[in-house]
Amino acid sequence: MKYKAPGKCPVCGEKLSITKLGCPKCSTVIEGDFQPCEFCRLPEEDLEFVKVFIRCRGNIKDVEKELGISYPTVRGKLDSVIRGLGYEVSSKEVIKENEDKTTARNEILDQLSKGEISPKEATERIKNI
Image (cartoon, rainbow, N blue to C red; front, side, top):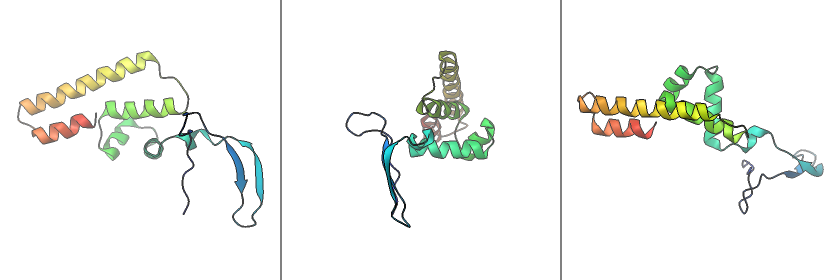
C-alpha cells in the first residue's frame, strides 16, 4: 500500500524535503535534496477541492453545485488553497469573503424565521459556510 508523503515535519512544522528516491522495478536509489511539488504539500481536503475546481473549469457556481456548498465557502476553500501554496490572499478579498459569509448566514436565518427551512437544515447550511 502506498501512502501520501507528509509535507510538514510533525515535530516543528517546517516543510519536509525528499532525500531519497527509489525505483520499485529495478531498485535503483537516488539520494539528494529534492523538493516535492507545491500541490503535494496540500492537505487531502484541499487537493480534492482543487480537483473539483479544475473539473469545473474554475466556475465557482459549478463548484458550489458539485460540492453542495455556498459561494462564501467556495471562496474560503480557494483562499485556503492559495495560502497552502504559499501565496498571500489580499486583505480586501478576505473582507469581501467575510461580508459574503455574513450575508449567507443572514439569508439562512431569514429563511428559517419564515419557516422555509427547518432548524436542522439551517444548522447544516451554516456549518457549510
